[in-house]
Amino acid sequence: MSLTELSAFVEGLLIEHGYIALFGIFVLEGAMLLYFAPSESLVPGAIYLLTSHSPFEIAVVIGVAAVGATVGQTALFLFAKRGGRDRLFEHRWIRVSEDRLDRFDRWFDRWGMLSVVLSNTLPFTRGMCTIPAGFARLDTHRFVVSSALGTVVFESALALVTIGVLQLF
Image 1: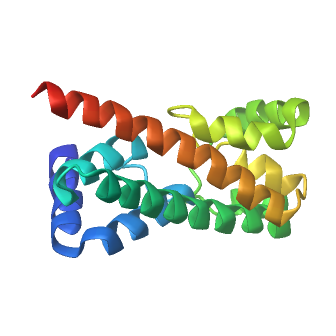
Image 2: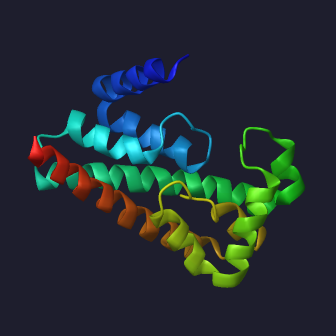
């Protein structure tokens, strides 16, 4: 399936199933199971397709995205926390190299829980400290709060940029 076909598939899901599809896609994205639809494109697409650009509707998109991503990241966190490094790499559905994971391990070692918040606010590193946080056995409630906080900040920034671009046209 080409990138164009995948984009059309995701667009069709959003149009057909709305916020339920958005939630499901973000759960998969948060668990690092979805690589064809990063949040950098999902939130702008959802705002364009699912809203009339009212503040309430945009807040709903941000909320659904944040809850979905946090649920997915929490599942991955718990898998890493309970299974450990060896078990994680037994499953090739995680497309993170051990070298890249080592870099985020060092980031987590240096910054602790703050690294979870920060990694969720930066494009293309979203959720990368989820696995090291699980390996370090971070308290689950603290992880969920940190993950959600970073995700809300990131998705809100994406929404603001999207609204700004839409107002230009």
